[in-house]
Image 1: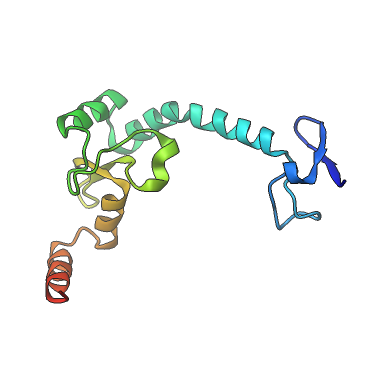
Image 2: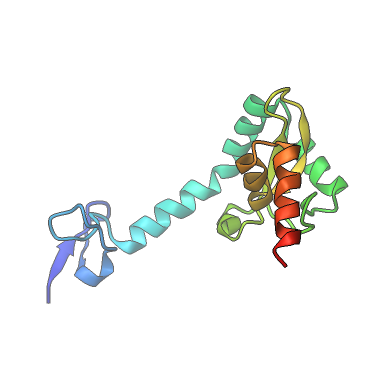
Length: 141
């Protein structure tokens, strides 16, 4: 049985207890899966505080202002009506609530899901391009 000592907890464990990491000599992470998962939980637990700082510095709003906007939209994306979450553990499915703002003026337009906000960004918030995309989709049916 091949084993390795976790750099964080100091316990010797089977190699299968370590995530794959191609950059390392043995192709395994230096910390065991248990320690890595524990570190991630601690990191995400502190995210609400980070969110407060981010909202204040980037948009000059408080987390309470953000929550009020979200509630005023029935906790749904202003574009696609998807139910939004502020839980960072669900950010990969695209329904993380994010602030949408005008890049040229800086004013807040509303709260969107991450997917819709990214989509607007790809179109550079350009109404002409968005209308052309709509026509393209309509004509391709």
